[in-house]
Length: 123
Image (tube, helix red, strand yellow):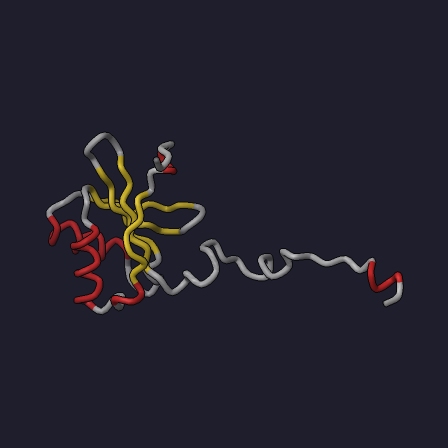
């Protein structure tokens, strides 16, 4: 190898800048259901990754009616429109999405506890 070939610049992050992907690689097809703890016993369930083909406000209206809870559609810079439901609604949400055909069982990315976003660390 010549000296000029050794000095060629290599950008390891070149692939990351090609698209405007906000979620980690390989998770674009998933619907993420996350539980966030507000206070000691109060929780929020967030649903993200539902395609733009569906109206999030109509989905929220159906969620609120079926699960008897309050909710909102929130616009986040990182993830886009996210549905936020009051309480631990992850089982109801998973079941509803599979029954209506909005997501298949293998497309649901489980439930993750988002305690780190609130300043909590895992023990």
